[in-house]
Image 1 (cartoon, rainbow, N blue to C red):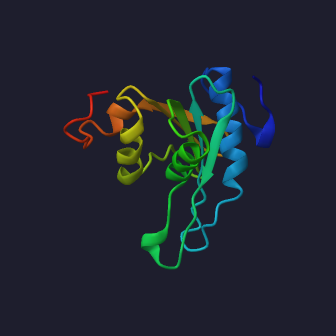
Image 2: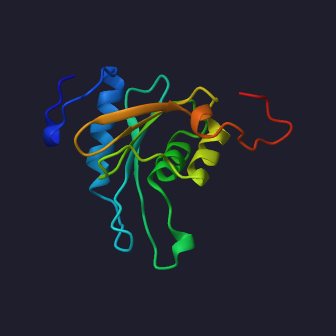
Length: 150
């Protein structure tokens, strides 16, 4: 996909599914409610065997503890819409020049539903920049003792 939306020019080769999810994350980032940090984030979670990506944006609150990150919004929306989910990857887009990794709370929440090799793609408003596995960013997730190792 040679997406020209918002000047997007991929700097690396990514699959069509990843590029589509990037476009979705970029689009939903515009819905961010971030009046306090002014740090707008969009995310798109791709589920296996589902052609669309579930989007999420960060939603801040004057009571900072009530703020929720884009990654968790996308994940929670997927669970609410689909019930049982099988995530394939997530794309996270910020306005920063460099790739911005998800916070530890988002990584731990992803670990509840995702395998250690789950891919996390990071981009900005211009392009996709990097990819990591969940294991790269959270090598020792907390998982309930009776849960099978993913």
